[in-house]
Image 1: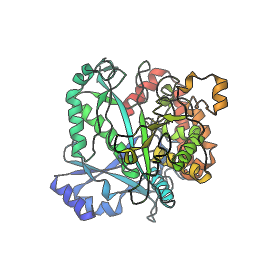
Image 2: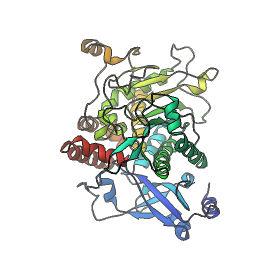
Image 3: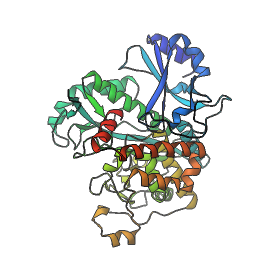
Image 4: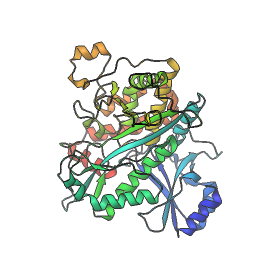
Length: 450
């Protein structure tokens, strides 16, 4: 779309307010709204934002980050191609924004610009990415005492849970269709009130945008049904947690050839694919700070929880960090893809996907090898067996993952000093805040904000 087409689409849909959105360092979706009378002008000029917002954590506590105080301004400038009319809000549309400095350059602390830099870095190697975030979420009936009651207690994949969620899921799917976001499947999951609604893959930047639309759509449609939809990693301490597995494939720049595919390999994975896996595993301790970034995330990443807890890879191994997904019959070359298990919906998708690309590209550059495939649950090995195989336990807290990120030269260089310093400050402040409180405080804030 061009500027005139976007303006026409907004007018034809009767749009009155347009949300200029961004996702911050704490994974919170924020933004400002523009009236239709100002829309044409704001498409070019953007709307002002204090840089301090990138130093704000999920509790709205401002952190002392150089250059992110009361002085200065950046602009939220919308991406023309991200325009969507919102089916769940009256007379409203939304666009994802890049943060630009006053001299019209990408701000170095903008997460969306970071992903675009990593996409460009890959393009210089002749590579492009298709990706999607495979989300689980929990549906609750809010109670008068402030607690949340799951809408069902059915079994995994059970028709009982399908019936309990039938109306709200139908409205969610209709809302996705109205926004041009293709749905792949739907099924109830293991946890009480837990459901999964995978969307189809898209080019990397669109995939991250789609994750924002996914979170917004699920929350808003559930609210219209008097429910709360939570994408928190572990909204119920004694139930299965919510993931946002990242699926990806690597293509040539024309998008014609899946470069992960090698029909001669036992797992149909190319040499380039193995190098990428190895890069992801090498940087996974620090990468977790971007893909599973919240205090609540580490309640989910436990051994034998099918969420992965050890650095490993394997074909259709749902306890491995990286799963090689089995191909579709007759579509082997087009359908081969990889899945990062250690990812959840509390992440900023631009940072998570950008970090994944940065890690994998380092593996390609250094021609790293991932070691042997793990064909069992790595948690079933002894400590000695894991050590011999090069399989390591993940960081077990948000603080440990953040330390690993700070010590990861490749990821820190990719993020840049402004983005990395603000991110570490924000997430460390969250760790300090939640570590000082009880689990009820933690769950309350995560269940509502994600």
